[in-house]
Image 1 (cartoon, rainbow, N blue to C red):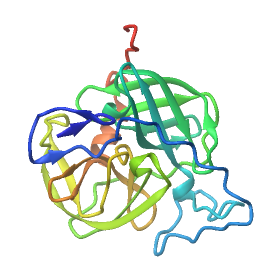
Image 2 (cartoon, rainbow, N blue to C red):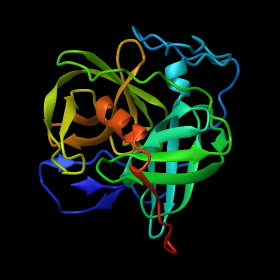
Image 3 (cartoon, rainbow, N blue to C red):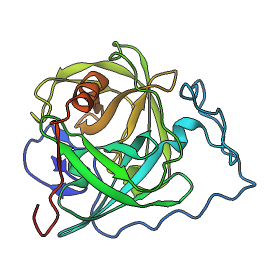
Length: 247
């Protein structure tokens, strides 16, 4: 099982964490030219309360996705994340672990100044606070999706371009990493190293889970939105991330 921004650990042969690859850090994308207008996500509505299309042609659900670079104590890695308000984003605990310097960039290549990061104790979740404003944030769904519901994953696989992967919820399973201590969602939407921390969205653009792993069959595993909501509501659920030098 690969874990944590390209870190390798022989924990199980059945599950591979869909995290960042380590090694050479990919270059930031060039700013999006104003004359290029990307196509919309087919069948995907923007998040409630957000503008449909930004001036540069991106959907609200694309604007809320961020790329996270972890300049770590011993290696470099990348992951994904998404904004939940103007100065807060969610990603995975293993994406920000062992960090010396966290770097966050937006869909248009803009660097975001990071303030603090904190990780959850019982789920593979982390909160990153930013000093700079984030472009857009989605609505969090009120309940977990059901089997057969559509799912769209928005993130930065391999630390590259913003990518959208579509599929459906195919069931749930006991968390194979024992990090969540409960049920996690299984979808057939494809993810790759670097996708960890990506938002999984329903057909209305609401967040229904957070990508944290993939199986040997290339199915993706999600921390369900019910767990995300429970953790966000618990003030003691997150602890500051230790730096390379210690707490």
